[in-house]
Image (tube, rainbow, N blue to C red):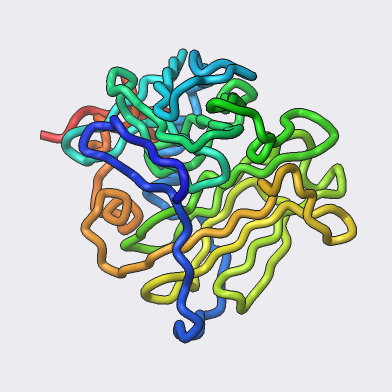
Length: 297
């Protein structure tokens, strides 16, 4: 069993991968599509944040005597929180080892990690309400520590000649397409240092890119197997503790009523998104001038 995150209000998540059945239906052809217009409209007001994320504990290299580890995080210049009206907001993604991320909206909500003995790495990334990561240098924090003993099984290197892939999105279940593929590559510049990202959807199509994020269409209803890899000029995966190959199962169920699906379909006006965008949100009007938003009545 993989690591577990508990203590998040109304949330107890067991992190692990689900295998897609071999008899799954054939996937449609995948297509890269433009950013959905509702998100394009709201992006400028979220671009103003230069977030700083800090993991206070556990500290780098620390050895903990218990398997239940309190995780303490602080942020600066980044007002996280979930809007009660839409269920969306600026938030953090917590990744334990190389497992899928968990969303975190409230710094006052204690987080405890239930971990097996050995070495573990936690990454925390600041993201927008639609799960797109911030890419300033202080928006990603990480710590590698030990529970009872060191075994170096989850000890990737950061900011060295050995690059590191962090897949921020997608994960879990989606009720609308397109779906965001978003990742951070640490240690190299994509397209400039002979490294690229390769993704394979349902084993049917493989594409190599040097973009930072994109929206993908072509998901089949039900479970989809997505593999994302960081490769060098020879097409080989730069291993880095096994972290540069990420495999996730994405469940697509059309006509979802969750908030992200509704946002993608344009069912929220910018005014209805007021509470999810931080203080004094704005959009650009048709003339290209910034206009402060007012909350919807």
